[in-house]
Image (tube, rainbow, N blue to C red; front, side, top):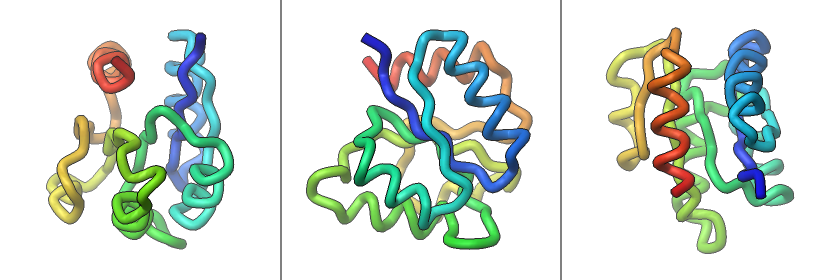
Length: 117
């Protein structure tokens, strides 16, 4: 059965690229353009993994990450950070993996598969 992965990034081209990589690997992909939308989608769709950009103009990925961590039902969803800002991931609890943009698809999928078990 396909695992459900939420991709959160304000850049449509990045969301599309990551979505294609994940779909080609057999995963079901849902997307959100900011942290606020990501929180709503996470509560409705219950993803198995979140791919998260931390730097977004609306509700930031960091805010989403912290809210998710405090949620009793969803706080254990693994998160992979994909960011254009080196070191930005230090603002949140330790993610499963961290990738700087642009990502290497093979290394990225290896981390995704490890996170999904």
